[in-house]
Image (cartoon, protein in one colour):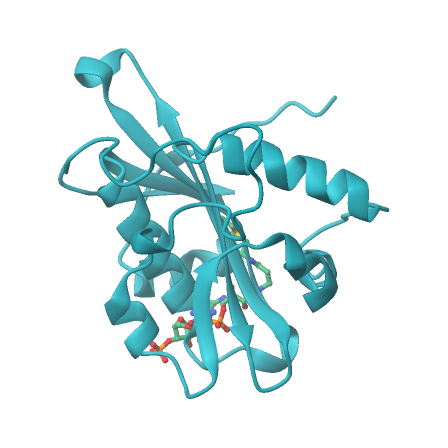
Length: 191
Ligand code: ACO
């Protein structure tokens, strides 16, 4: 896989995403909905909504959608909710979003940006885009492009000076259409 990166001007760090109180997962959204780019929402087809992941997405096909990307395995509702709560409590770091087709109440696109907090670059931050997938029946409608645009917006809002990702050779063209350029190589060690 290759690594792609896009430079993003730093913005006001931490302003938009206060950590959720650990005891209060009553809030539906995994991270503040104010981090969703209104221009990306406006560009979606009628009935399609881009928003933070919600716990209720367990029943809207979120894990089944992720399974179109790679193995998900068996995840019960309690385990899903526990991981959701972890993300919510660390929402200056984990921002998983979805596109829902509200005409059918199904999640049809998903992606996550993970904000890495560094010492380098004067306590700089780097956004890592992960787990991008669009339902096979919905590809070619620019939903993938919208997911990436929304994640880059979040990365910038949370103060990242760049956003990077790893992908297969076959997806380089897609990420170039999203504004990324090829840089360096990915290495891996499985455990
Ligand atoms: N190679 C070259 N160009 C592509 C590719 C590709 N593999 N896929 C899409 N494009 C182009 C489209 O033709 C379109 O071009 P245009 O603007 O000139 O019309 C543009 O990229 C935007 O395409 P979208 O319609 O937004 O793409 P789509 O919604 O179909 O989603 C995605 C693309 C996410 C790669 C989808 O095919 C998918 O889910 N694939 C399976 C899972 C996967 O591989 N995910 C990426 C893993 S890498 C990661 O997670 C960091």
